[in-house]
Image (cartoon, rainbow, N blue to C red; front, side):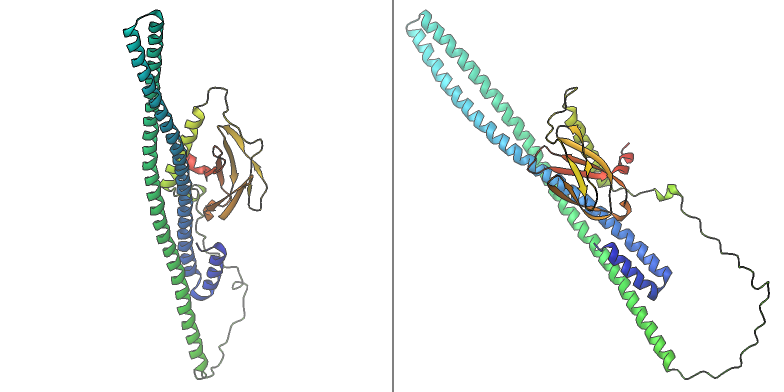
Length: 344
């Protein structure tokens, strides 16, 4: 993505060559497409965070499935052993019935019933985990396809921005050559015939009166300036993250907070002061803070996260959610606060 400094230098050079109007129109179009590119990068970063989360969940479920299958295998072995002991107790009681053999038979039947229940419960657990794992595999496939599609759209948008920049430079170069050629022609032309200087009347008071300024076009209203084009994918992402957080916190009993790993958790944007997170529960932490445009690095304790902020979000308040359930690979969710008003 062309950085703002490069764009400013480009515009400054174009103004002297192709004129204010055409240069500003071209710059406005370029800015709009660059903002669109930054939005697409932001959405792609969200997709990558989601993909990483699904991959982490799959790793956790693979471990759960392995443990559940091992437990089921042991339960089946225990069931077979209890069945053999039940049959032996039945034969012994049938061959020489007594209170002792009857007691042993009763005990063997109880052990067999418990072993059978153990197999059933562990089998159900394996089925539930396998079902959840299948859903995760579908989510993983969809997430990977979404990331691949986003990558293609990013490449297309980047190509468009690059093409616009090249077109602006080419137009400036063409006009600069035309101006240089015209100047050369003027320089080589024969000198003009001297003409008598016309009589210029002395200025009068009337002629020195100030000229009325041309009417200035109306400034756009604050309401028009606040209208934003919200990316549908960003809306879906924010909606999904809010639902995830509400579901997670909704699992807590009244008065409980769940696991709380950090006594102090701070966010430090590049070149700015640290900001303290608020604990929500279940190792979820939140803060709201203004952001700066461009490629940013956010340091949270010892972790670092890189995110792209579009230029038209410069100074806007963003919601930061830090998910610390997996300390080996924590998640940082962030989105503009103004998006929340579009969810209602």
